[in-house]
Image (cartoon, rainbow, N blue to C red; front, side, top):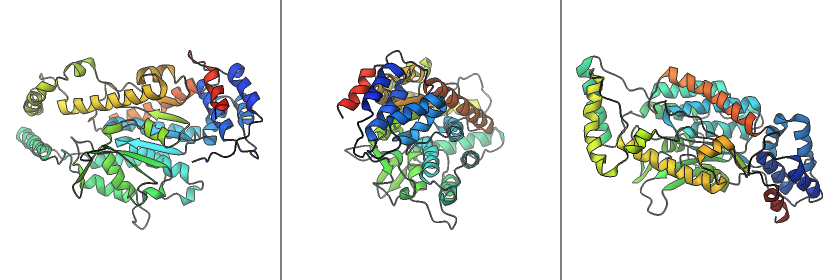
Length: 424
């Protein structure tokens, strides 16, 4: 990360003038202010130069400023909806938007890892893995293939498959055998000679994991500094381990499952020192129908009837409506609440408001598509390709809308930003 050096205050009057008269865009104001606070006496690029870049280059100039501050890319979980991230990753790469802090939870761990290697190695020839967006695309498609459960033919075969899945679920083994997935992760996230890459090889990488049996803190952030020798593929497997789909990781009695404890690790990124973050949230929101079904006393009833309903559907009784399990709903509800709390804490807006209006403090740019019509377990190539395409479009739209120098936030307060300089 960029180290804070002795400050150069000679440009501060000019900077304060710009904050009050030259912009109403809080993202621009935050970037310029952050650069002003970090400028060294002998630096050739300070807040005055930053303003000049914005005036000359417009949106492209604002995007370039991300490389002059501590900026983060933050990726949510979302099972198949995480394919949206692949398109977002490609668009960030296409636009040249640089970040130096990379945080992911569950499926979001994949793009966070690729960003860490893409941003952390100046020379592409020295990168341990290929970080081109096309390679990431191929990688996630291989993940999709690895988690496909073999299906039997005929009605009885389908019933047997469902009973096997029920047995695995009851035993907390997950309905998807994960040996193929683990082999793929290990192979991809290793050097050419087969040596697994370590967290210390991926600069400023943070992966959120839920540590089930830690009595003090269930949130575990595996990162390049505190766990430098942790194998990256193993850390990803801990984070991307939906408790219904995959077997929890057991290391000497310590149980790790998924990243649901912070489904969008914004707070993790800010605690790591980010001045500004671009977040990608693909797993927020449930339909009113799903929310109304959340009734804890009836959980057991629903779990008991769920499997007969699934069996009936599989053998051709199609008029029975598909439902989510209560377990999935409750976990999703928990994740939503944590994300809502963190967004409100950092920006004073909930995720819906933040994605539509922007952050009045210019700290969080949130890309949050409405993917409520996409089943989290629709593991098909067609769904994946559509999500990837949409990811590029949604990301480009959000960046064009909010990082455009002409964007004016309804709650923009120049005094808030100028006080950050005066008080520092």
